[in-house]
Amino acid sequence: MKKLIIGIIVLLVLWLILPLFNINSTYLIPNVIEWATKFILPWIVLYWFIRLIRNLEKI
Image 1: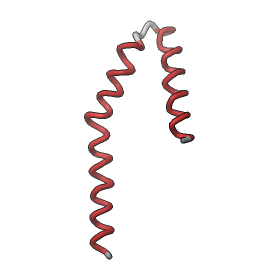
Image 2: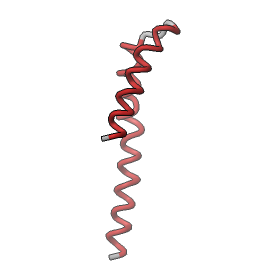
Image 3: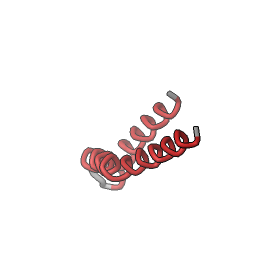
């Protein structure tokens, strides 16, 4: 729960600070989240799935 709150706070801070540098935050933040879920999240899931299989093989 604590990590979720920290993540929300980071997104809100980015949402407020990015316009100071003339960066469209309503376009950038959703696209970064979409990119992360397409390319980074599957590798994390694959890593944990491999660890699960290795632990099950040891039993």
